[in-house]
Image (tube, rainbow, N blue to C red; front, side):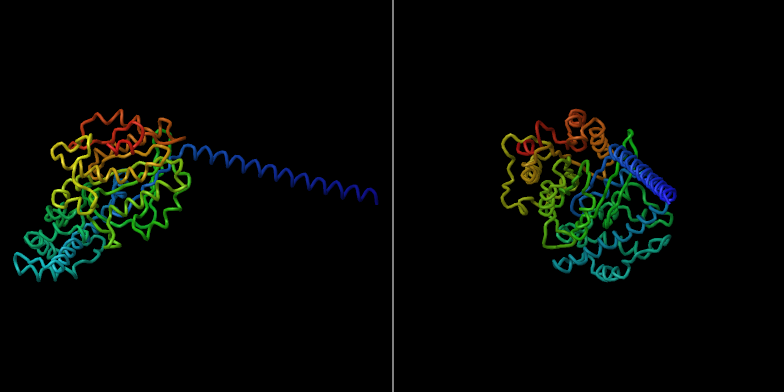
Length: 405
């Protein structure tokens, strides 16, 4: 009996020892996995592209992509056709609402015939030749061109002039969008798009999320462990309405959204870089759409001591500053640096300089605290910039001080 009990006890002890060893091995394996994950995350740079719809976020992402394959270019080709038709039908709506007359009455029937042509093309399907004739004659009509110039409130696509000035090329049977066509193409971003690439032993994860109101509820899924936020604002949107809400102004929406991003607990220790985008369109728009119409407290005067950045049109500096000040008021309570860059996203050479500068600061050791821009401004502010627009706002301490000039 004693021998049997002793044997059973030994077996149980041996079994328990094996279980303990297995638990220890499992625990050690988990620890190794966690350490490897920590090392991997330490080499990851997570960047969010945020901003309201039509601010240029996807254009920034496109610049980072290593070319496009045939399938992707075909998708853009089909979307460009939709852009062409949508812009023209929107112009027709403006003409009806604002009682704009056609220069040639025969174009009224052409405008009406265009509606059923606004369809999604099949893959490989050529642009209909009948549409080319219709769009060409409509674009040449002075009344239609007048409607395009009035199209701010109805949001005629900003790429309209670019594409309509080159219609014959687009309707060629062998047409394939070039890189500039792709940058100009407008398509709504839905969901979350991630681009991953390696550079200088770091893994960059760049997230582009839809900016429309219905898409913003998805943003929170990307908010954890963010290294930097690139927030884009379309400066040309000061007199535009939202696509999803014709009663709301794009710039006011951007201010509200930027305020919520700057002051959320998620980004207390996260660097935020403000891209004041579409400067080229802004300079064009304020020549015929006064900014004071949309900012009643703005008197159009250049604040005392302000620096002239748009040398050829001094009043443009005052118009720019009113937007700068609105943004500065939002971020004045932040304890770490928030920086800004004037950008034209379709200017790839300019954007590559700006983006390379941003990444250079990450590599230089700003990741652990904030993504400072001091090195960037020292290296690039002295460079000549297109159209007299500085690449980056010069800084002393923070953006708020610079914007309060």
